[in-house]
Length: 196
Length: 196
DNA sequence: TTATCCATGTAAGAAGTTACATGATTGA
DNA sequence: TCAATCATGTAACTTCTTACATGGATAA
Image (cartoon, rainbow over all chains, first blue to last red; front, side, top):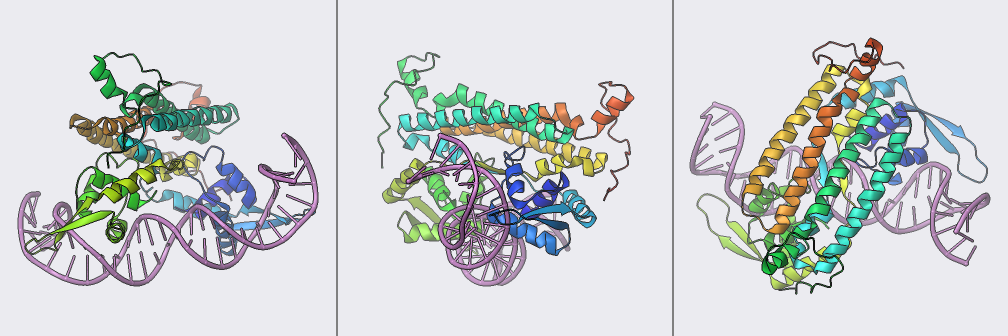
């Protein structure tokens, strides 16, 4: 499965231009697939050449023609064929988690600010997903949006409850006598000196 | 961040050969990063050339020499430098979720078998992560393993509770008068005929 | 006056995968 | 006898991103 298939899928929900496809990918899809213009436009050209989509030109003043693509019957057939293949395993690439893995090499306050930024990102993304959920969605769309909400909510809560593991307070708490109070975040702990 | 940085990180945990680096990526890293031999070996060559790692040859009978790489002080410095950069946003690519998004185009029994396979995968992966948790891990490793467990547990539960949204039983339940009994999975519903 | 939205497209390059090449050992 | 494990490496290929090219309208 590639961007080409993804375009077929988006077009199965209704005609759209390349620009609009990109925008729609930022809706319910955003948390599990993305694509840039540089991959969408060539994919649409190819689909047109394969006659899997048709194209209507809408003239616009002072702008390039808007090209509205529509799925053809052959395109719908091809989409079903692609969707019938065994899905490959999910692939997640998270630089955040890599950095957390080696958080002991970084100043605690830097790690804390990365964690804060991550939590903010989760809250903003969850807001957007909740907004989406309020729209009229078909059951499949509700499924994938709900999936995103479930996953992000769990991740947010986990990080809130376990950030001490990467912020060096676990060791400090042990040394101090093992209280379970969360350490105040603003406390200017000395950074781990780079030991290399 | 790329495979090169990832190799530096793995080597920060102790010397290893290219083969062993690949194996270690299948441990606590597996749920948020992966790399093939075809990217690891060239990365190590480059790191050696840059003097960020050193290499000891262990002769082996009837096998290519095992090349054990060790992080140099310059390598550790470079790792810290890379980790200090702003992490790019997570990138998830899930063909499973794309297929679920268009589940109405596929036979219900096919969707059900994909969902079952997914649930099995979650249970197996969670077992492995729980095994990892039982090992001696540093706090950062406990953080990322726990993160994986939290995320996958939530996703597993969500799918168990909401699979009806993609298995076509929502509509059937409405037509039948809104019972909440799960419909029998084996029921041979006709696929949506391609309406093109 | 600066940035963002709209709107399409190309070209160069990065980054990684897959397949291939080699080959003994071990377990099913 | 067949597959997997151990062990390294190259080359061709795929796929996608980034930067560029164009340019008016609109909002801060």
